[in-house]
Image (cartoon, rainbow, N blue to C red; front, side, top):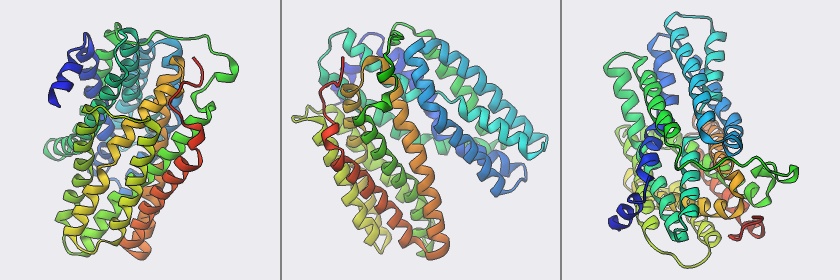
Length: 401
């Protein structure tokens, strides 16, 4: 199993974008928490920290598909360098504004600029894998293994990122977390920008009827599904925190959240290394169904030990769903829209996460942890309904060449 990943990374130039790609998207798991720690560390309110972080996150969600589309049409390098410049100015401006106790509107403006210029690094890396496999005429199973590797790396960064930003902010000074974000973004972005050999060639010849990835019905089904998955991810952390606190076991909250991620990480490692028979749309539907069914024992669990088992079993479905959806996206979209398509996944997850967090937070405040888990259940149901209703639009043959 490990040998398959070694073989994958031995492909010429693969490590040249996998390593900077991981470094460049590690801040995805650090930026929001770093923003909160920066503002609260400067003796500003948690409410302000929440508003500023929300502005940054929503600005990112709005512009991510557009940045992906620009990369498809103009090449990754110029968009990477432009976005890095703007993001550096926005993030530096936010840090400076907080340190100077500047008016609230300056924090919001800087957060909007920083968020709007966040490049979808994970989307760029997956687009490079698709181009590399196509250009080298490598078997399609290799691309699925590559997506499996990227899903595992996504889980790793969401384990490492929050710990790193918290350690820096508490161990050094409040701004250290976001300064680390700026350093990592710069290293990763420049690493990708200077490795032009693996970047997909820009494709500008796109007819008006096929100008956007979201114009394809199958993509809309996948995006709606990812909104539902985002609701699961956004709500379950809030609900697990409340669940552990209600049982006087606050210490268990971090463990439960980690087990949800660990289940996905292990499943992604195994799933990506195996050769699977059958169509990817069926595997995607099964993974989403598993995740939905996994929310039922989460909703019903009454003890920390049962909850630990429940979240681990549910988490197993996350990575297979992500890997099979990536395979479907590559089949549904032309090469000229691959990066934009992956960026839509990011936007859908962010939007769903925001809805899930807000809904679960309201439920906890008014009714406790159990109703908050119902938000998680609802997100799973929404994702499964989207897959089942839109099944005829999601198929593995290319819609157009």
